[in-house]
Image 1 (cartoon, rainbow, N blue to C red):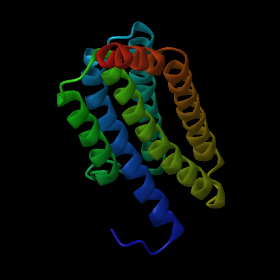
Image 2 (tube, rainbow, N blue to C red):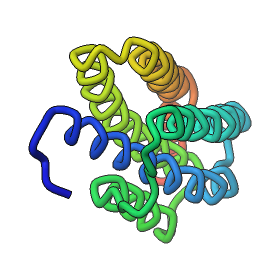
Image 3 (cartoon, rainbow, N blue to C red):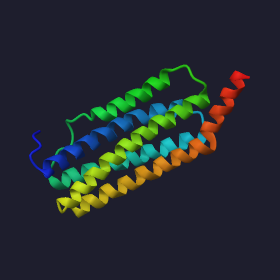
Image 4 (tube, one colour):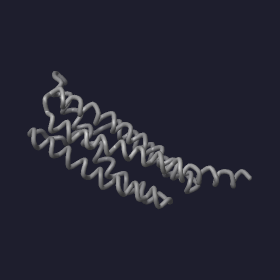
Length: 170
């Protein structure tokens, strides 16, 4: 696709986000299965449901504008998820693996926040305020997920990973 206008760039961004969300929906169940902390598992399960809704919202935007959002692969998200998949293949203490999964998930969240923030801004500039509001809603959810993961890491998961590591050293 030639990027000759902000409208073209906006549609490309939507396609990229659509692909990213589909990839995340595929990856999250694997992460959930590998997670040992119940609170983290619940956070990932909640985010899976949110991601499915976020994908529906993107499809709603595409349908409203008569644009097909499929047929594109978000290579950035594929790379981030591949890194996460490699972590899950490592032989690791379960608490350390959970800390690693949070790290991988937060990289994904930050990538999504950047994409949704740009798409929202483009929508506003193009006069697509309904789209901008939908995209902002998703951006807000991504931010809340990031904060939840930070809280879980700081309160429980990283502390448990440190305690487990200290036992191995001692």
